[in-house]
Image (tube, rainbow, N blue to C red; front, side):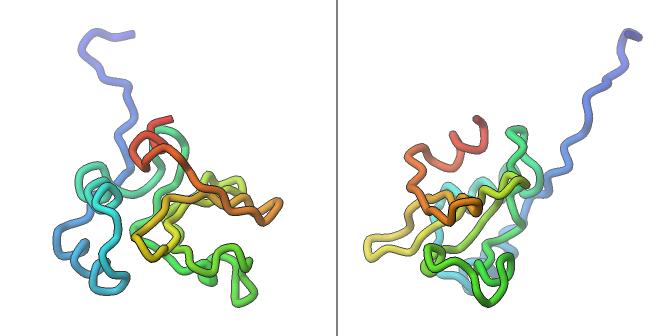
Length: 121
């Protein structure tokens, strides 16, 4: 290895501007701060963990089509592992719940760890 040469690959993640975050809030309402801060400070794209974080939340029908799984009825998807497992937030009366969806078995599960811990794992 040559001294002084950095062979590290540059991150391909892109950070969102405050204007872009405001546009997301206008379209989807008050999403979790941890998620919005992550998009501003770390960015969207393929994370170190291999999870692809989208540039903003998407409705399940944008990924699964009009006949999307019933389990995703109240969910906004924010990323996936590029192998059939999606992550998102489910709308509850008391706010948002971080969830994962396994498309192989059409099951939605609560993700106990927060977004930051999940994306770093």
